[in-house]
Length: 257
Ligand code: ZN
Ligand code: FE
Image 1 (cartoon, rainbow, N blue to C red):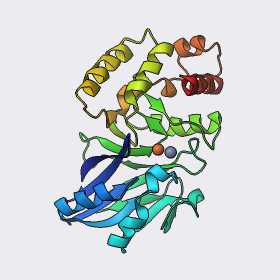
Image 2 (image 1 turned 90 degrees about the vertical axis):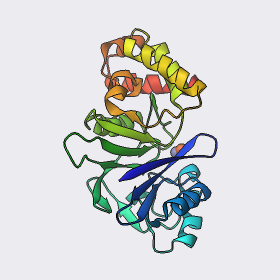
Image 3 (image 1 turned 120 degrees about the horizontal axis):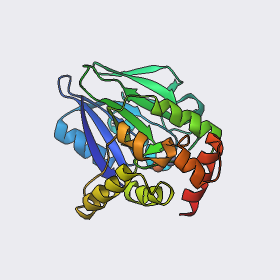
Image 4 (image 1 turned 45 degrees about the horizontal axis):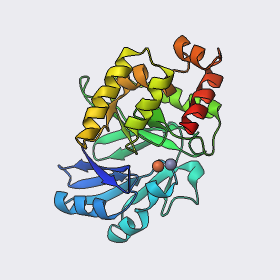
């Protein structure tokens, strides 16, 4: 399975999954249709699936146009997004699986950013390969999504599911927010030397206009404050010993940053 990362709108990423052997493709969160259609043309691939993580316009905006070009494509989304995702035909819950070519993804129910948000996790086929996680606006490189429809408790539960995945997982998040996220992270986890190094690396990458997505989940576990609600340094920083409250206070501070 090849993964193509397409920039869209101001800071979104659309991901095209390509199975060259079967000349098929799938798309994760098509913000707009045009870059996807262009990519499919150059790959000479037939679109068989649209995998949506949640209903926001910058994730489903291309669904209808893509369906006009590929009427046989199947639109997947969360069960609780029924009525909110254009063309949705499959209503997924925690533990469901979806297939693309000869790969199978596990569905994680990860509410918090929205009440219906899901993520797609493709485990590695061979032991030394990475897993691939498409997590929409739940986990970002160096950050996490805003809580529009969910509570801190739900988001911690959702991020806990992601944190339980192997370090050797590539995190394909839907926005290029990494630099700002890490600048915030340093204000709450300033003594974390791996975080300091990561910020420098990302600053240099952004100066060269390089993408910082995907990131490695192992690095997120060690440097992303929104996966570190149980670390004493962060709890001390926000004056709490409660993991949920720690997370909630960090999220609140980021909202104001
Ligand atoms: Zn969103
Ligand atoms: Fe978004």
